Structures are given as C-alpha cells and as structure tokens.
Amino acid sequence: MKVNKNIYSHGILMLASLIILMPFFLTLSTAFKSLPEVMTLEFKWLPESLRISNFTETLDLAPWGRYYMNTIVLVVMVLGVQIVTISLAAYAFARLHFKGKNALFLLFLVQMMIPAQSLIVPNYMTLSSLRLLDTILSIGVVYFASAYGVFLMRQAFKAVPMVLEDAARMEGCGSLGFILRILLPLSKPSLIAFSLVSLTHHWNEFFWPIIVTDTPKSRPLTVGLAMLTQATESSPEWTLTAAATLIIIAPLFISFLLFQKQFIDSFISSGIKG
Image 1 (tube, rainbow, N blue to C red):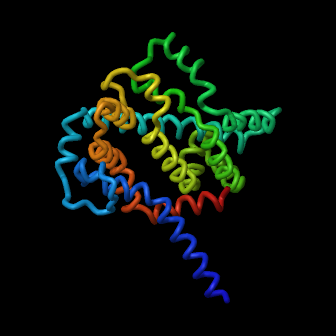
Image 2: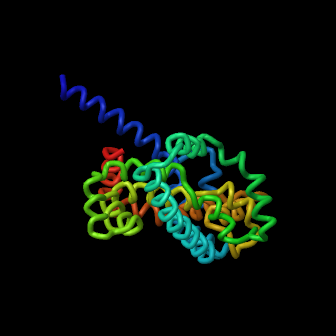
Image 3: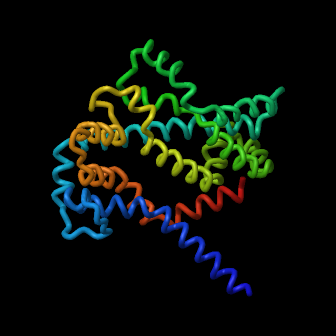
C-alpha cells in the first residue's frame, strides 16, 4: 500500500512538473522554428529544422551586451547592500534587547504585506527630485532593504546559542566582529537561500525598471526584451522573441543545472533553522 502511495505521489509530481515546464518547452521549440511554422494552424512541438539564425538576428536587433552588463551590475549591487542591511537589522532584532522591539519588528514585517505597486508614485517622485531617474541606481535603491531577508536572517541568528556570543565577548570580540566571524558563517544556508531569491527576483524584475529607465544605458535584460517586442508589434516576430527570452534566462537556467544540489540543500537547511 505504501508503494502504491509513493507511485501516486510521484505521478502527480511528474504531471505537475510537465505542466510547469510546458511554457519553457514551447519557448524552446519556437526559438528554433521559422516564422511560417509558428503561424501555421498545424501545431508541432519539434521544428522542421533548427534555425540558429533566429539567435544571430536577435543579437543584432538590440545591445544585449549592454543589457547583460546592466543586469549583472544591478543584481550584484542590490544583493551586496541587502546582505549588509538585513544582517545588521536581523542582529538588532535577534540579539539586542530594547523597549518595543517586538512591536517594531511586527511593523517592519508589515512591509511584506504592502503591494509594491502602491509605492510606485512616491518612489518615482523621490528619485525624480534626486535626479536619479534612468540610472541603474534608481532601479536598485528601492530594494536595498528587505523585510523577508531580515525575517529569514533573524530566525537564523536566534538559533545560534548565546554561549557563543558570551565566549566571543570574553575574547574581546565586538558586535560587528561577532556578526562577521560567527553569525554569518553559521547562518550560511539561510544567507545562500536569500541570495538565490534576491538574484532571481531582480534578474527577472520588469515593472519598476521599465518605469524609471528611458535609454539603453540603464535598461536591464527584461526591459530590453520588452523594447524588442514593442519594435516588432506591427509584424510579430515570435521566433525572435522566443530566442531573446532564452538568451535572458540562460544564465539562471544553466546555474540551476550546475548547482541544483547546493540550491536545494540551502533551502532545506534554512527552512529547518527557521
């Protein structure tokens, strides 16, 4: 009976995986087809012949090198600042004692319940007054603090025994040294899990970047794809759009294939600590 239950559960998981992966398979197939194959009423999963020229044509239509550089700078900048802010805030909420700490932490978590779209107008006006629009900084600055990251790291820091902090204090280690030498290394799974979430989210971020960017000098990959799609609206080039989509998601997809064990282990470990 137990074997049958395992078969059913694995079957359901495989079916769900196929449904989730179906858009990816469709994009992959379209990227290697000719436009007449895509526009025909007779749908086929496999292309008649692999058209590599779709990718070369796509690369010629937009400055993808610039878009890639902007995106890499953006995600690295945001993650670097976030690690600093969430670590310091998590230490304050997990290890320090001050009046109203729990109430302040509860108010801090309310940020997770506020839709990001509701803050677009004040954020845009603030950046406009600071003359930061159409820069990579204007995209990333609104994400420098993360309530989710603070919550995740707070739970990890609280799991570290107080005896380690007492021993560090006796050896003359200050708060910053304790965070860098003990808390962060012991909270590595949670830190990796958050880093993966942050990198993936900001690599794929679209709504806010398209509002604050106007020129290729600061556009990330997602906005570049939108500009390509808009340029071909009069005669939709679905094959080129699919090829551009694969170009954008390739780094994340390859990274997951190479490090999927480390990815899964970090999420499992951070979940157990939380």
